[in-house]
Length: 55
Length: 389
Figure 1 (cartoon, one colour):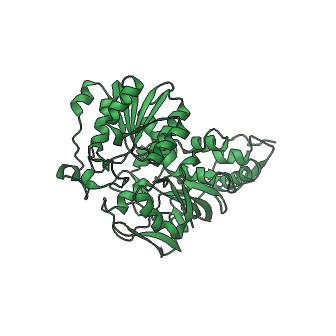
Figure 2 (tube, one colour):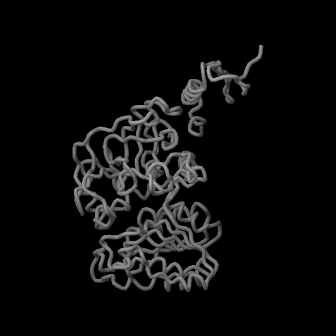
Figure 3 (cartoon, rainbow over the protein chains, first blue to last red):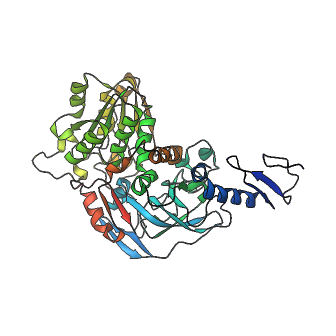
C-alpha cells in the first residue's frame, strides 16, 4: 500500500491527503490541507506541546 | 468591556467600550491576561504626539485566545499567546525580509503598524479585557499553557526584544564594551541583553537612582549618574577610553544634563530641559572610532511639544562631522519583535533569561490612571507596570 505520510504528490485540492508526525506514530488522513494542518496542530498541542510552540 | 482610553494630555480613564469582534477570517480575539504600560505610551500621554482622544492604549499584550477566525490554522480557543507590539502581515517585502516593524500592508501609506498607538493603524490597544489580533497565525506567538512566566512572557511583546534589538543595531559582540543611555525599561533590557550576550563592560547612564541600582544589580553594569557630571567624561574615565558600542534607549525626549536640578529629586521630563540630540551626540563622543551605535529610542518627524522649531520638525543638531570623522556606523528604528521573540521566549522557558526583575508593579486595570501618573513622573521604584484586567 502506498502511503504519503512523509510527503507525497497530491494531484488536486479535493484529493485526500495523508501525513504523519515526526515525533510519534500519529498520522492523519484528511480531505484537504487546511483540515490536515489544523489536525496536525491539534496533535502537537496535545501530545508534543514543546514542538507545538515552534511550528 | 473595560479599557484604558486616552482623554487628552496627562489624562487616561478606564471606560466601557465595545468588545472587539472577528472582522476577518484571519483574526483571533484574545482575552487579555496581562498588558503593560510602556514608555512609548507616555509620548501620547504627555500630548507629545498627534494622538486624539478616544484611543485605547496598550501595545504590549498577552492572553488566551477566545475566538478564532475561520482561516486561522494554528491557533484555537484556549491557546496562550503573546503579541508583538508590531502588527504585520507577514507577506509584504519588508515582512518577508524580517522587518515586521515596517510592514507596508497593515497601515497603508505608512511602514509599520501597532496596537493602540497614534498613526500606527486602526488597531485598538490591549489595555483592556479583550484584543482583536489580525493575521493571527503570524502575529501571535504561542506560549506554554498555564500561568507560569506570566510577567516574563508579557515583556516579550516589546521591551525585552526592543532592548535586545538595541544591542543588535549596534552589532554588540561578546567581549565588547557598551554604553547604554537610559535606564528606563528598554535601557535596562538592553543592558540585560548585553550581559546575556557576554559584553565585557556595560555602562548605563541615567539620573534616577533606583533605575541605576537595577542596572548594577541585574546587569552587572557600571551606573553613570549624569546629574553628577558629564556622562561621557565619567565613562571614559572609568573605562580608560572610549567604548566599543553605544545604545540610545532614551529617544527624543532626552533631558539635557546641563539643566538637571541636583537640588531636588524631581525627575519628571520637562520640555524646557530637553535637548533631543543630546544622547546621540554623547554616543558620538563616547564610542570609539569605527564603533557602532544602536538607536531603538524613539524619534519622531513631528513633535508638537518640542523645545524649539527645528525639533518640532524632527530636525536635530547632530554632530555629524564628528560622526563621519570617527567612521562610526549607526542602526535605527523600532524593533522587529518577531525577529527575536521566539528565541527570547525559549531562553525564558529554559531558565537562561528572566527579565522580570524590571517589573515593579502588577495592578488591576482599574488602577491604570494612577499608574500612568506615577510612571510619567518617574517616581522612584516605578519601572515597569503590568495591568491585569
